[in-house]
Image: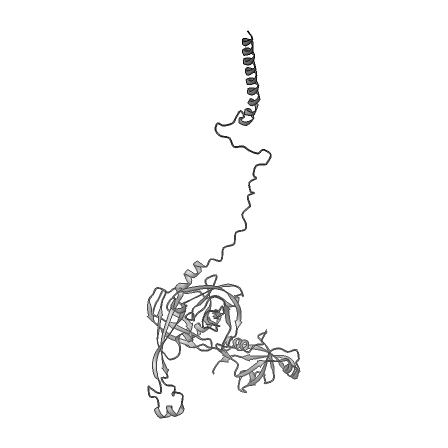
Length: 394
């Protein structure tokens, strides 16, 4: 009997302990799984930390403006720029004794001691200015005593060219080929150019045909001692040997200059190039085609220099600026109109002058038969005289 009571007590104790264990684990199981949890393994999440924040979306920054597009301008302009080749006979010395007067007198023009005449080729560029084959280039491109000039057109035709005329004062020349329907560049007004304006230089540097470079107008009215009659456009568009005679074109596709020279200590591009203004080139081309030479105005021989403050004080005009008349011919139009040595020229047609080149250009550009108004200081007093313009060299 005792044994049965002991077994019953043990069974009740085991049942009671099992129920307690079950009721203790059940709440923990509900906290982990939850009623909407998906089946499968669970990833614990620390609810005490906020979820990672997404980086704010930044608005797009300013987009750089595209550069100027000159593709259409260049495509039209290159069709009017040619490659020019000239051959001239040049005498080259063959001996170091050539410059010795004794050996020259003794051997004369012997080929060994004196020298030998050989053909020398010059290469450059040109610009077509009329559909019937007239084109402009630099005089130094064709050289002196030219034996043969050849032009290669943009369509690769190679034609002989005739020299219509040259102008040493501006270093320009006009050629003519027998062709029609050629593409031309319209003349632009170079007087309207502004510093920092975009320009394209088109030519054949190093025989690389139809090369286009881009730059700006760096300065205007440059006098650099390359020719007698100067008013150069300065540009940083790359100009190299072979570009001479090529086109300087503005953003509207107009011819505003003829590329002529570079300033360089190496003979290569250094960011400074010079072009003859289109207004001057057009006058030269028109005169050469019409008359065979350039017709420039003149008021006779007159030699001037910039007046200094000391000279101005000595002449009784301490505040005067302009050009001092140093010498002149008595038979000149200037002298006969009343200008004398010792006068100070202050203006031409109302425009102040302080540079001899400016005075020369103003008179040369005047139409033959017209008159120019010359402002003066004569014996300390201001006056103005009217001078008739004649033909230079007459």
